[in-house]
Image (cartoon, rainbow, N blue to C red; front, side):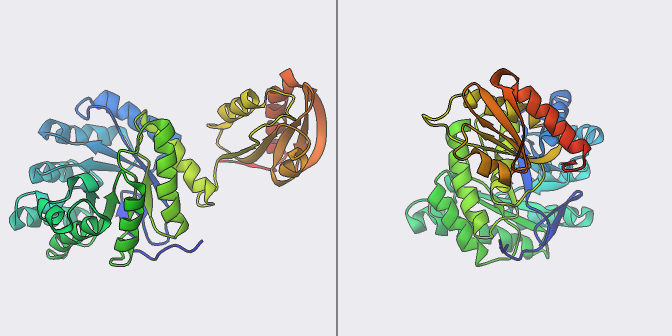
Length: 358
C-alpha cells in the first residue's frame, strides 16, 4: 500500500509522517488536575498500545500539572488547548511534547508569534484541529453550511498564520461526525499540503456505532495512502479507542505485531459453542505480547483451510475440536478442554521458536 509522502514531525520520541509507522492516539477522560488519576490512565493507555496521548488543559492549574505528569510517564503527551495562548506557553514551559491549538483563535498576531517562538525553540509541534461543528462564521456564510471545502479553507488559514512566523512543524486534522464529509475534507487537504495528517471521525458515537463509523472513515483514507496518525473517538473508556485503532491498522496490514484472530460467523453446521470459544481465546491472548495468527473455526468446511493460513487454529466438530498447527492436525480434544489445550499448544509453539513475543 503506497502512502502519501509527508513531512516528518517529532512528538517526543514518536515520529509522525515521513516513513514512520502510523501512530495511534487517544485522549484521557480524567481531570488533568487530578495527577494520580491522569497518570494511571496514561499508563493504562500505553499498555494497551497507544503511542501518543492528549490531555485536556482547560485552565492554568491543569497546565501546571503537566510537570508532575511528565515526571511519572514516558509516552509523548499533547496539550489540548482552546483560545488561551497563555495555557499553551505554560504547557510548553512544563515540558509538553505537542500542542493542539488553532492560531486563528488565540487573539492576534502577537500571541501567535509568542507561541510559535517558544514551540520552535523547544522543538514542539502544533496540531491544527478543524472540526465541522466549529467552522468560522464567515466560512459558514460563504459555503452556506459546514462542508469539506469550508474545513479545508479554515485549516489553510491557520496553517498560513503559523507559516508567517516560519513555523512548519505542523500536523493537521479535519474531523467531522459525517463520514463522507470527513473523507472528502482529508482528500482535499492532501492535495494542498504535505504536512502529516491526523485522522479521525469526531463524536463518532458509542463503542458499537462509533467503531463502525471510525473504521469506515479512517480505513478508507488509510487505504488511499492518506493519514499519518489516527484517533478513534468513542463514547466509552479510552482503552477501547486504542483497541479499535489497533485493529484498523492490523486489518489493513499497517501494524503487524500482536494477536490476529480469524473466526467464522457460525452457521447451522456449527456444533460447538464457537462464539464463547472465540471470545475466550481473544480475551486470553489480547495482552499476551505474542505475534501470532489464530484461527477459530466452527466446522471442517472452512476450518482446515483457514487454519492452514494461520499459525495455529481449531476447527469444531460435535462437542469436540481439532487443533491445527500450520494446517496439520495435531490433536483432537473435548469441547470443554479446547481453549485450555489451545493455550498450551500456543505456549509450546512459542518455545519451539515458531512465533515471537514482543
